[in-house]
Image (cartoon, rainbow, N blue to C red; front, top):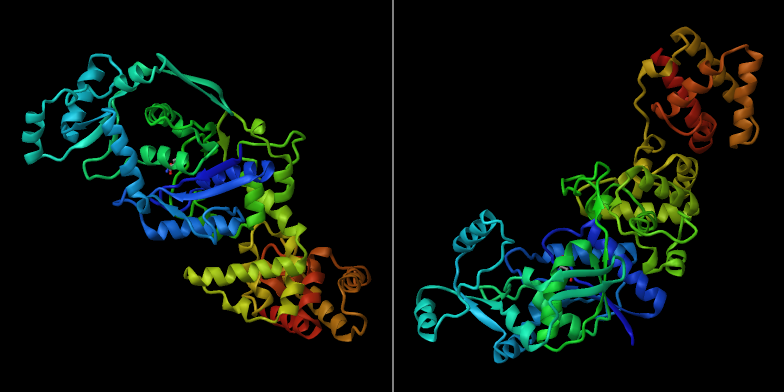
Length: 490
Ligand code: GLU
């Protein structure tokens, strides 16, 4: 049997981290075992579905490199374009007498639910409309729209379903539910739209999906879907429900702007696709040997559904920053710079303009990124190094090391300036460092009156690469100029 998996998001928001992680696991599973990964947009909820969200999902997965095989050429299947198919299967259910019309209003249903809860029962549809006569239905149709419900008891009887429904989940093992706990559920809403889990069953069968790998929040839908598969005599795929992702305080991930629950926000924050992908793979899964820094091909190589944990995974931003930093240092300077410049272009499309970087000389930027990468956790950290491109704003207070005085600082900077003006050796990091050390030694100065103020004079920052690295990038005359400017501030 060919392995076929799918990601089936509803385009009702930007690509969520959880959805992207589900897509990744499906993708990994097919890549590992040889098979096809399918992208299907579940947009039957016309009110809430938006084309822009669909585009965001499409772009997000593409950016991460989570590529799908079907449909071809980076297209997607859309449920909104397959309505005839759902109608065909719906007619079959109608013909078998497995569905009935329901005229109950949301208010009536809410009232019914409340009464059941008060009586200590599990709330489910009472079957109120199940035995309406043809005349009653004709009368009701004049004023009300109807939804269609599945007659669960009838299906159970005619299809010999067991009292205890069960399926073997590839993550959780056997999961059971008493069929009595499943009320007659709606599959076609009163506006005529199919409910996604009905359309999903039809599509999973039509697309010959062998493994449904999705979030744990769908476990209860699985039982309803099992009944549908049986009612339509369709083959039941295997299921693997992956754990939810929670915040550090174990709360649900929030969608607040600037947060980290959406791929778009994480891209905006400057994470590399490689770093994010590495992090996402470890959300709920780990390789047998517990390695953490993994490339996509290494993840594919060791991926196994058995490695998925049953408990919820926690979003740890320290770990994401750590892994992303490792990836930043792993890439060679040129590759890193290209990714950075591509990201700057992308930022521009989203309203942030850093053309100062895109217009800068590439050779110069390569030197800049070489000295900055050891301190970077995200690409955004490199934006903070724009003092390498324009004169920094220097706070005179910051120039003075905490154990020093303005006078001693000024003296230190003057000595450096003089030494640099007379310096004729190679303009490389190590000789510049040696020169600074020599000044400290020969002039009996404190390190804090040489290295600290020079670094601040060149960067204007509390934290930056070392003064010798900054000087190396800026060049001899620019370095002298900036030191001179700093002296005038003291
Ligand atoms: N459309 C559903 C969702 O976005 C997914 C359904 C499924 O994976 O079966 O949650």
